[in-house]
Length: 213
Length: 393
Image 1 (cartoon, each protein chain N blue to C red):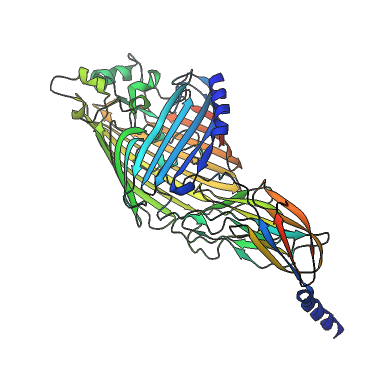
Image 2: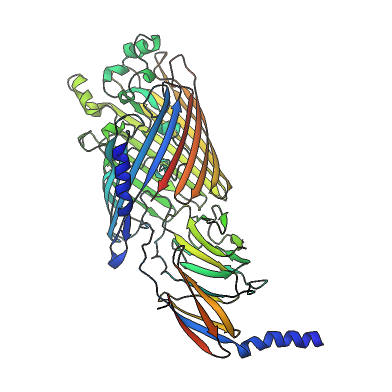
């Protein structure tokens, strides 16, 4: 009975004393490496190509002893209209991410990043189960499609339970954070990353702008 | 080589792109370093005697898309000849430059004009360094036939007999520019085309200045003529993402324009056409890609029966690990006899290749080709070894 009570308290208490961090990541002007999404030769694209998703950054809190949840919720990053669904997703270390294909033609998602090297091979629309990869090491993973050179996305693996992507204007919000002092990190791509120290107060909201002014 | 290095250094900072306000343009390219070693006479479309050869190639690609309806592309290369060794001191070359108009704003209907790769077959769309697991083209696209293109009398019975007896230079011991290939690499010939994809069907029809088996020196607008154009096309069917099937055809004169002066009165090169029919198939799933083609080619000549050739290849690629693949290819060319005489040697080629994509833009490839000649005629050398390192920017 005592164990149950302690467990319930542990589960219920963080939101009661939890704080929030919100703010903005100011994106520097970046040079996209994307090629024009028109085929020089035919045979790889049989539908209309969508505009690439807008760039977003990943934001997360880190602190000594803070680690990702033991069993993070599975995530998904689809490919539709010959683009990735999002330009970047943030996942906790240990997350399984599936890559469903929603186009008529093949996709072949791969990464040669040090954080995670994988190659899903060619897979078709709605293939069951959708190919998936477990990301077991924190860091940035750059995703490409071997068939469609213009398709590029990033996956940010963090060793933290507190993270969120920004929107395309750089705004973010992370809730449910126990009070304390943390390092707030943000990353846009391989080179552009920032961090600052933040103090989260119980039931309070801390507002931050990155890079710090 | 100094010029190449300087050009490469100057190019790097200019690599750029813009996607603002509907206008899109990009300038990129690659720097490929290929080393080939052959046992002469060199097999494939390479031009150097027995030994080894270094082939650096700088490629720049400019693409401009003012709207969904217009697209311009050009590929400029600096190397030692389109066929390795053709121009040992190096040359700049515009290999592709075309303007595409898409009246529907998508891939269903395209009109294209300029200098661009042939629509024939299934290899051409995957011939770029980063798409092709091999360093040299498959047999139908990468080996000459004993079809003389500069002198129509080279296909006479006397000339064929002299080559068979060894009293005249053989096909593989005289310059490759004298001969046709079934298809000469990607055949960046000049002209116009209409093409597109509607549902599971792909279609393409083109009118070009020369036929797709013509030597690279004939591809520019200044060569050939549109009084005797070549018509080519392909109809493709993709029942699902795994399969890609296609039927191709081409018909046009195979003789170079200067051969008109050597033809009897009343005849011109248009009276001696080449007809090609091809079937290509490709299947892919997971870590495997299998593809193959068979091409029948027939050449009308002045004095003999038609010269007929059948050439095929089958290839597979298997990804062994992320970024690492192995590939194998078999190919064969079989030719008819004219009055009991062989006019071109029958060839069989087995090839192995391996590739390592070190980063998405840095690729290392290696290849070995073994060619055997099933004929009394002299054929190309047996062995070709190559390795190449390409960096894309």
